[in-house]
Length: 152
Figure 1 (cartoon, rainbow, N blue to C red):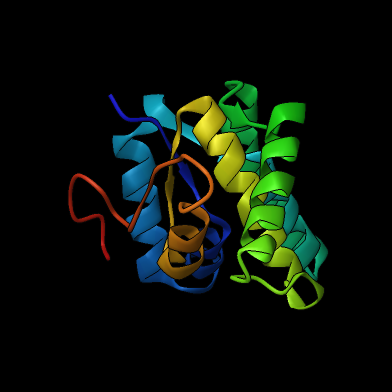
Figure 2: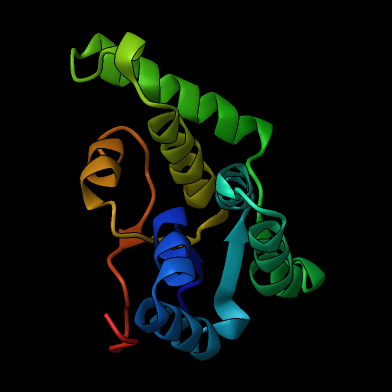
């Protein structure tokens, strides 16, 4: 059975929109035993949290249930190497200008490499960037919400 981790963009949308929150909640409920939190996603969410209330919501509603169950994808040394090599490969093929790469794309490379290493499928709305990364990193990603309509 496929194991999943949800990308930052879907959590942000869920934090801002009740319908999106409902879809994410249904997806995570349906796939609870196969759902993971990616450490880079948690990092991105916390960096963007502008109030103590947002930090608390992220830590208690998103992170805590999966951390408690040790359902985490955390980049290993190998993932860091693979992400760096992938970015260098895209740059050498003239498909990427490293000086103008947004931090989020570097994070996406790390997410892709670690998902590939862990065998976890990323659920994301950011198909364009991950399609580009899939040319140099072996990993799987899908659009929301796989295996059923969870409110997309």
